[in-house]
Length: 137
Image 1: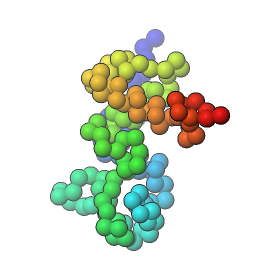
Image 2: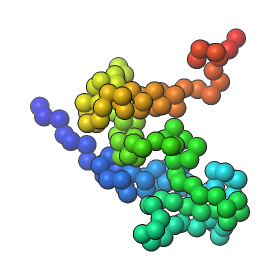
Image 3: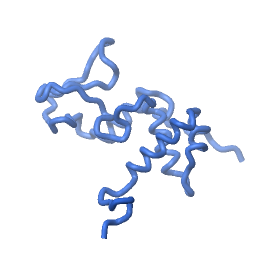
């Protein structure tokens, strides 16, 4: 039986991936991760061709931010669509996924897949960890 291709646009289109991530992270509108400003009148979205897509400005702290600030995707050159697809694949795999398998499925180098795997696994760990990742007792 042939496996059906994944139909979610967020796994293939950068704009759809950014919009999906913004909808999950900011369901009630964007907020500044630098100063914590929630006032929507002081947050403006960059418009036009001079600004990269998804760039926001905060008038309270004069800072710039995107939806990836403060996440494991921050300061990464890997496209958001690949990040979301990798998170999906690692989340639905029953026995885990190796970086080699992820590199084949995403069409990226092994080094990129290794980086993705480590960052995603780090995001999946509980907040209260001990020195090596176990509970600190």
